[in-house]
Amino acid sequence: MRHLKGRKKGSSAVLTAIIFLGFSVCIAGAIGVSRRLVVSSGCEVFGRLWSKAVLSEYDVHLHEDYGIMAYFGNDDEISEKLDSYLKYSLKNRLNSSVKGANAELTGYELGDPSNFRKALKLGFTSSAISELISGQGRTYRGLDDMNGYEEEGRVINNKVVIDTLPSRGSRGGVSGESLAEKAEQAGDENGILGLVRSAGTEVFLLERSFDNHVTKSDDKNHLFVNEWEYVINGSTDDEKNYRSCRNRLFIARNILNLASIYKDPQKVELITAVAEAITPGPLGLATQALIAEAWAALETEEDLDELYHDGRVPVIKSEGQWKTSPEKFIKSKELRKKLDDESKELLDEKSDEIADITDGVSTVTHFRDGLNYDEYLMLMILSVNENVRLLRIMDLVQINMKYRYYRDFNLMEYYTGTRFTLEVNGKSHEFEDAYK
Image 1 (spheres, rainbow, N blue to C red):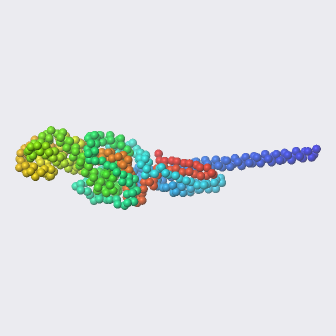
Image 2: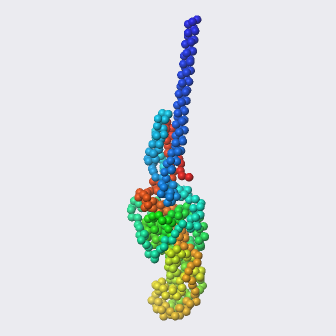
C-alpha cells in the first residue's frame, strides 16, 4: 500500500515537471515572438522615419533657385547611411539579427523629364503662377546697340559637360515663317497669356528663373545671357543663340509687315505708282514686289529696334501704326539694293515726281499696343517641341548649378524619392516615399 502511494507521488511530480516545462517553452516562444514583433514594429516605424530623413536632405540651392526639391546621392551611399541608422537603433536590442539595408533609387532620378516636371509642379503655388502670368518680376536690361555686350560670347566647349546635358543635342526649333503664323493666331498680349496658361510648368520656370537678351529674371549669376534663346536654338554658343533668334524675328516681322502693306490700299497704290515711274511696262509688277519687300524690311529694322529696347510692336499693323515714312523709304539703302542700275537712275531722275506721290501717305512715329520681345520669344518657345523644350530648360538648370555652386553638378545624381529594404531577423521591410 505504501509502495503504491509512493508511485502515485512520483507520477504527479513528473506530470508537474512536464506541465512546467511546457509552460516554460510556451513562455519562451511567446517571448521570442514578442521580441520579433517588437523589432518588426520598430523597423516599420524607423523605416518611415528614415525615408523622411533622406528626403529632408534636399539641396538648398536647387530649391531656392528653382523651387525643386531633390537630394544628392546614389544606391550605395543611401544604403550605407541606412545601415548606420539601423545598427545604431537596433544595437543590442532584443538580440535582433540585422542583415542590413539596401537602397534602390532607380526611377527617381531628377534627370528623368517626367520626374523633373513633377518636381516643378510641386514647386509652384497657384499664386506664384498667377504672378508670373501677369508678367511681374522681370526687369529690362538696358541694352546697347544690339551688337552684343560684354557678358555675351560665352561658349561651352567642354565635351563632358555637353555630353551630360539632359538634351544632349536634341534637335528642334521654330522657323521665322512659323513664328509669323503663330503671332497672327495669338494676335495680342491676351492671346499669349492664353497659350502660356495651357503650357507646361516649365514655361513658368523659364519666366521666373531665366534671362533673355532684353529682360532678366533676377540678379543671380547666369552663365548665358540668352537663356530663352537657348531653349529656342539649343546651341552651347550664347552669341549664336542670340543671332539665330534675331534672324527668326526679322523673318517673322518681315512677313507680317508685307501682309500689313498689302492690306493697306494706300500703300499698295503708292508702291504701284513708284514702280510704274521707275520701271514702265510689264516688268513693273516685279518691281512692285521688290519695292514692297524693301519697305517691309526697312520697317522690320525699326520693329527690331523697338523690341530690343523693350517696346511693343503690333502683329499686323494698321495704317496709324506704321513707323517708316514713304520719304525715308524712297531714300533708303534697302530700296536701292533691290533695284537694278536702270531703275536706280530713273529713281534719281524722277525724285520730285515720286516725292509728290508719297506726300499723300501719312504715318506715325510710335507704336500702339502689340507684343514685346518677351512675348514674341514666348511664341517661339511654345512652338518648340514640348519634349525638346523641357530638356533644354533642364540643361539650363544644370548649367547654372554648375556655374554657381558645384562644378560636377548632374541632374541624374539627384533624386525626387527614395526606395529601400531593411533586412532584420530574416524578414524584409520595404519602404518607398517621395516629395509631395
